[in-house]
Length: 138
Image (cartoon, rainbow, N blue to C red; front, top):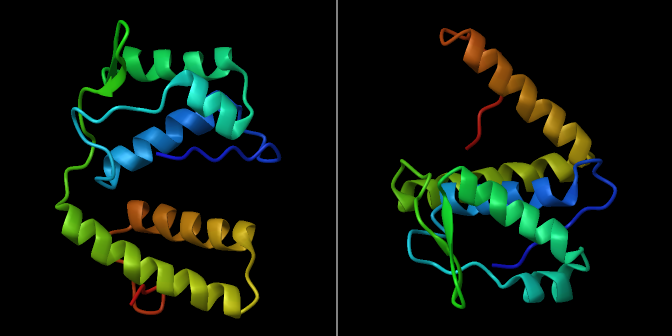
């Protein structure tokens, strides 16, 4: 797993690390028994402070997702994905095509994020959305 830290996001680095591990678990890219990168490796590749990585790993451990093994590293203890990884990958492929279409239409990351959040909010508030509302990802 390769962590990416966006220093301009406003989200603390440790929360970015936690979010990325949780996303990898949901997408099936990480599963029980998988080893997370060592603190030293994360520091070397991302440039964050070791205490930041330790804080992220502690938070993941407190949530029951990983466990530290003395002298061996940090390992995934539980998964988050409840959907078949093949289904997730097919949806991800379609979503990637939609994002490319959105970028070609001139949308930037914030535009895409706003659009997706609006659809998620509308879908969560009204399961009976009328035709023409929301975005179809095909």
